[in-house]
Length: 109
Length: 130
Image 1 (spheres, one colour):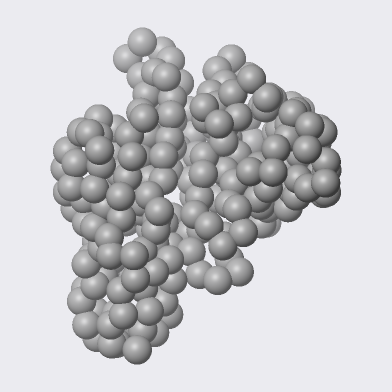
Image 2 (image 1 turned 135 degrees about the vertical axis):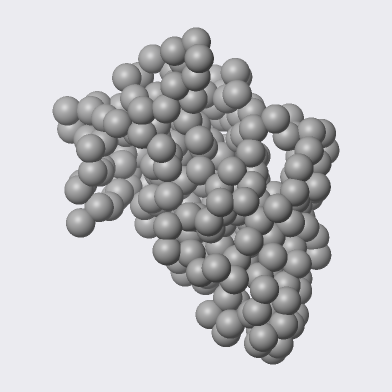
């Protein structure tokens, strides 16, 4: 099973600053990486699929990158509404197995 | 309105059983791979199980394999999760979720879901305690 480790656990930044969230895999990911945003009391929201593609309706300030074992979610200029927990996720095929990272909490000062 | 609505959660004793349901509306349900994902209180997300469009393929996390069974009824636009031999660490909100891509197959004709979930239900709480 591939383990995803997200860092940092918490990121505290001011509006307008750049946020860089890391997701590191225990072995090379052969499928693709996905990112979700979860605000308190809400269900997760799909942000990024296939490592770097923004989901429908996601602002351009969110971008994803990476390959093999190292992946990054970047929020180019933080908005107050970006305060949330961000999860990365990967899956393997045949057999289908899916794992999530532990999450990074982004706090806006 | 496109939505998923879960039901069937509740309080159950260790070793007991529950059957969760997830009803879809506003979407062509049988086009999509569907999954169950859970979240323990204050914790992260954990994938539980997934099922193909036609019930042909089912997959489970190791933590629930042999205890949980996923199924679907396309006529009723619903998926289910039969949970047996429940343990305290099964306590969580259980969400159903839709795969982003309908009708996705690989070169061998096998389902090839994206496993990126673009529609989630609000979830149903399962508490396992004595």
